[in-house]
Each structure stands twice: as C-alpha cells, then as structure tokens.
Image 1 (cartoon, rainbow, N blue to C red):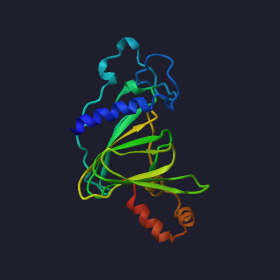
Image 2 (image 1 turned 135 degrees about the vertical axis):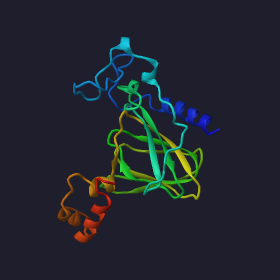
Image 3 (image 1 turned 60 degrees about the vertical axis):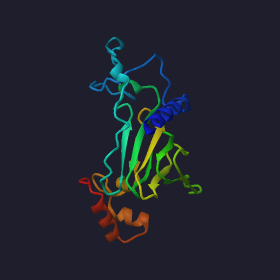
Length: 219
C-alpha cells in the first residue's frame, strides 16, 4: 500500500515541478558526466550515444533508512548524484524516515522549494519567514497531508508520534543543497570564533564552546 502511494506521490511531484527553478534544458536530456574535470554550473553532459536507461533510474526508495542517530531521522536523497539523468531537469526528491519523536533539524535548501507528503505517522512541521518579520508558520500533518516549504527559508519536521513516520519530499532543483543550521554554525570547519558566536547568540562563550564540541566534524 505504501509503495503504491509512493508512486502516486512521485507522479504528482512530476506535474507539480513542471516549471522548475533550475535553468531550462536546451535538449532532450544532459546526463551528468560525473567523472569530468570540467567545472560548470551543474554537470558536463555525457555523450547522448552512450546514455543508458540506468542513467534515469534509482532503486530502493521503498526501503526504510537507519534512524539510529542523535536526531532520530535520516534522509534518503534522489537527486542528480543518484540519477545522472536529472541533470538540467530541475527536479529531485527524497525519502525521510523518522524514529518515534525523531527530528529533521532546522535547515534550509538554498536552491529549491520543497513539497512534503506524509506517508505514515504524524509530523509537526514549520518554517520561519525572513528577517523582516521572522513569522513562524506551522502545521501538524497526518498521513496523506501535503505541506510546502518556500525556497531558502529555515524549516523542520518533527515526528510527534510514538511510532515511526515516513515522508516523501520533492524539490524544484536537481541539486537543492542542504544547510543544517546548528551543524553549519557550531560545526563549521574550521570553527567560527566563539567570540563571534557568543555575541551573535547573546550567550556566554562556555555555552558556545560546549555546542561546538557537540557538533565537531567527527559527528
């Protein structure tokens, strides 16, 4: 049942992102040539004569991810890195698995709007508008519910149930990117000065040092 719903959701995303945010393709396809040393805004095209069906294929989105980690969630991406045929097409998706009370922490996607559908469980989700208002927009979602997170805004998903939850998300980019706020700020490499972070967050430097120790690159 869940697999069939997953397929219907994928088809819905395909129509939803017909007007993609990435540059429009100028040919039928441009399968990413991942081993190219040429640097462009995207990926160099594979020779069309060498393109195969597997360049447009991904298997295993029906398999649950391992949520045995500190936040209790895991994302299984399906973007241009997994399907080279997505190059220039402006769409991608992902599966998110949540343990009971698992969290997909506050993060942003700098290159894509996100649309989420709950397949199983109950999710508390939300996003924050830009600094002019910092308005918090939030909703509790149940199986079959859909929610949109506008491009670039900080957002999260939290499983508020005592059972596992599953969501599938679509993106308006072949490579949406992800910036997890806490990890980026407190786990940067090299670390941001604790003087800077203490002043920015208006806390004692000892708190900053502790947080940086929790988000060190080894984690």
